[in-house]
Image 1: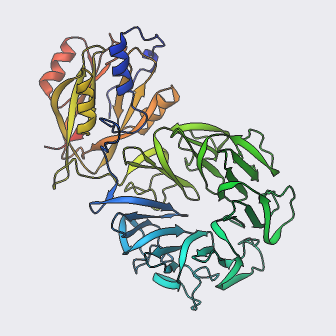
Image 2: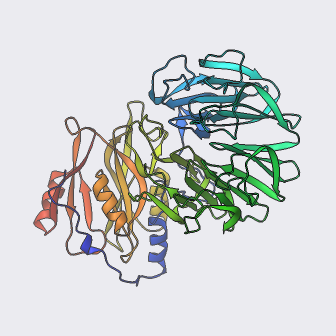
Image 3: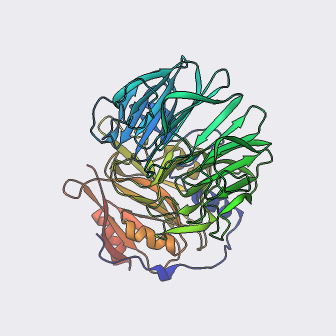
Length: 536
């Protein structure tokens, strides 16, 4: 798309020399990852919506995903060949389809799904080859079927299901936790079986389970070949065994377990073939290992670990074949934690993908996307977080979004944003409002936003090229997500890109004006072709 590629050699390591005002400008312009910013504390400037309704909960499965909106509607998208979307069809969907109303919680397995409605009724649908739906029929269902009443919590994974009732009893069905799907003989239950009392939380892994009781004690059972039960042995157990007291959260993965103790410490145990324990050794451990402190929540994929710390930072490690680490690399795995995002409030993890809500209400996803499970309207895997289910409130009914253009007279940088709140925040600290830059569509190809922290005053760059984005990230630039969308070249209005070889910041300019482009080129700027396309 470009006449020439970005020159990475222009990156400078000069230390900031500007006054305190410039420091304030840098702090605001170097936004921590998300593509919109808050004008003031507590003011939400972006939203994640489906059909005009705010999304309040997200769940990821094997190749399908779900969301609950503020009115209790359940929406699903992704793979559907076993009816796991619950819309009465067996057709995959790149866009959310509505399944049912009055939903308060949802959980996804490999090819089945379950939801709890406001009255405490548990519903399930999808594959039922191993009794994972917990219904009388031996056949699967493309629509929700009633399983039981009085349910407060549900957890699915693989071909297994578990639920906690309002009396604290824990019930399981489907494939036994101690079974492997490749086993010649598998034991499974078509109807729910009670296994524990006084349970407050349960998590199902590929072949083991973990539960927390009301008193904070952690119990595990199932396969223990890799030490995933955390009881200092590799002996499997068909019934729950107590592992530790003082536990407030637990998550189970393919062959390992992670839990958070009351003091905020994160502990892991089990398989470590892809560095999923995060201790840098690659060796299994039947004894829980402490990884980090100040942890708010943890969620495990098959072999990928995602952690949200109390300061809002998101960390990942483990398996990375489909980009599930979200770090923009192509490495097969990473065996130590790396910081990926900031300002995160909640995390969600599927088998090979992940998602996160940020403080401004936006939702970001990354990883495996072969059936559109990320919800970005494509089937391309994402190695860095991309924004999904973005509200179109900034655009009009025809799908148009106003792109604001601002100028920093202290650094020479032009900045572009679809967020009126971000625009106003920058104006408040001295940036010049240069009005409407162009009009962008609310759907199309993403334009990525990056920030260079190495130059005085900082510098933003925008590109629709995944290759250019990844090259900049590899060179140390910070990826700040999808800024906006590009219209098709055949119908769009071109945005011309120019490069200033005389500056270390404010190096690029983008404009729909051919006259502005020509003026800059005459002044010595280098024309780099059409960057992307707006709409008329």
